[in-house]
Image (tube, rainbow, N blue to C red; front, side, top):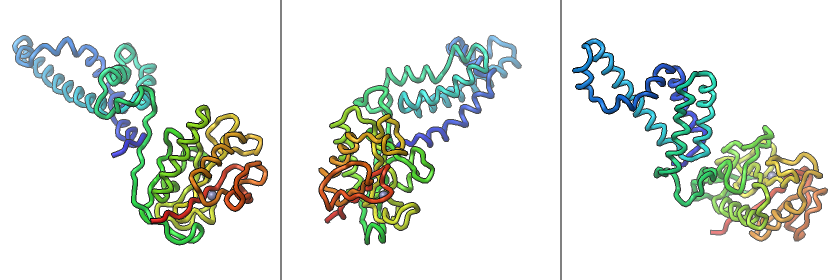
Length: 307
Ligand SMILES: [Zn+2]
């Protein structure tokens, strides 16, 4: 199962809320190690009966909390996530007194995670490298035409990766909705190869901003006539200010990087690339074609895969 940031948050949030309401318990836990060497029997022998029972209940409660914390540690899959988790903890620390400041569990977890990578951490991945969702490949088939077709068994481009982010043209924001990011698997493979090659050629280039591809089953998509069978991909022109957003004016476009990105798609043998009239981009006639409403992105159409 691939990791998704949203799933982690949904899973963990109730824990934080529950722990935030237990300020007294956290104070007790801070001192917990001093009790850890004592057995329930020795406590029972040393203390009056009522107090012993109270101790026993609290010890059991402490054990349950310890178990819960262990589970939370296992879910911390990398420094980026751990930092996200630290945020609400730090907020709570500013509201609560001493013990939380002295014993912020999430910070302890970060250190433990770095010293002893769990099986969920890839050892070859440098620490601090963001962890992106993996592609779940499906055997796809593009039917019909880009403007009258469908997509069977589409592969979803993850909403972001090492070399790309996705842009939702409906809400004008990052990322795109996953359901707008389905393509033929061979198209997605080529796309990943192109953006990787482009970023290797231009190491300082920001990640590529990718827009709509197709719906999961293809078919008509709002804002588009084509994009119906998993062969069309909108790619926004890299901006001179390096922000990962669609440009809103031609003078925001980094012409050199945009031409480099276009060239990388051409090298992959794409069928068509529609570009804006005022972009100054160039390429083989018959493949690179000026088209209205393409001043902020190039529309790349891959050739239908041949089995
Ligand atoms: Zn398009």
